[in-house]
Image 1 (spheres, rainbow, N blue to C red):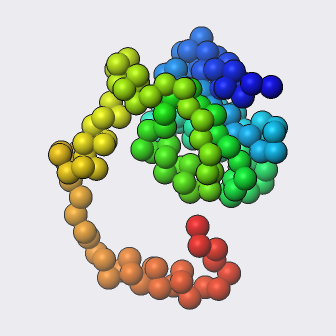
Image 2: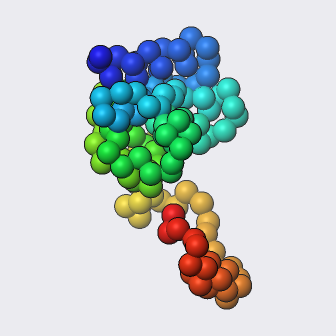
Length: 151
């Protein structure tokens, strides 16, 4: 089975149904697809519903875990910063992608703005530390609970 072809099928389904951009993904473990997803930003009115995130959510549900160690991700475009975060948190260590960030920019998506912000070239939003002491107390309670897993 060609896993990129399956990611492409997801992306084409999303385009056909007008769910969002041309982004489809599959998560693979031990040679089998365990998660599928395509961009559903418009369908769900949720900016976090990128193809990679949808495939990760589906794989986690299907496998009954938040840890996708040993899984690979096939996706139609190089992951954006948000999806990279999801990939890292899920412990996926191999990603195969089709189009590059430059290709994505060429059809009107704005990943470059995020990378400029990370490089200190622009501020996309204001951030202010607020009521840190109260939040540190919350962290202390969490850290003291031996049953909590560090995720």
